[in-house]
Length: 168
Ligand SMILES: [Zn+2]
Image (cartoon, rainbow, N blue to C red; front, side, top):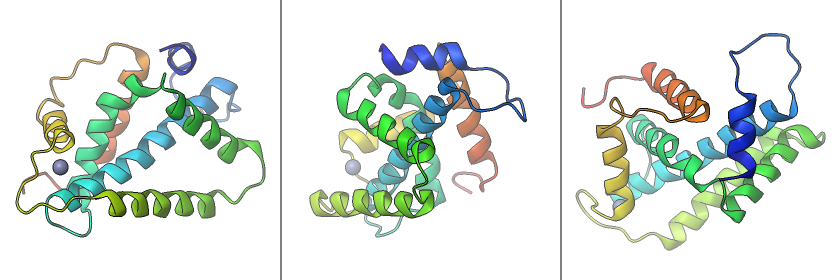
């Protein structure tokens, strides 16, 4: 937990409009973008595991909560660091068409998941699906341990609050 978390911890402040993006903010936004992308993959995987061909908003909520709880623990892994640095380059490094690249990355992830997926009927009880349900069940009790986690919890809570209630 060196590179990314340190910069996350030192760089967080209240959102201030008209402040130019500094390096830390860029790193944070790239990190959140990678996390969101992974959440999209997880939502799709969860849908597939549970007998559906398409994720819905509940799957996305679940995956976002799961990623908020787990993603920061993975940011010292070389492949995750690489993803984040690549995303930062993609977002701020050049005049690359951001939306186009994002779509490509997303569909690439989906293809990979589809190719490796084992389909199961009913409710899937694999480790990842159980983890995701646990993340949702314990979301309100989660006490973030640093500013980066606090930021993620606020962002995800606010993101899912605009969606319909879980379980109707
Ligand atoms: Zn599963």
